[in-house]
Image (cartoon, rainbow, N blue to C red; front, side):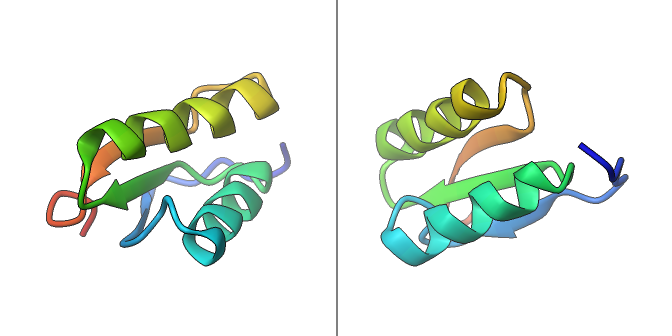
Length: 68
């Protein structure tokens, strides 16, 4: 991962196809991301999938309000 960013990028709807894809791509670039969802359980699954895929803890789950 090339970038070490002090900012966390929040994605409302981070469990849908577009939000999850964007969150993954920014995390792949080294940015911490906040995966937001109406369901914290879905957000946790999405964040865990990103972290597992990257082998790093760059994604964290939030409800949509907490992701912004």
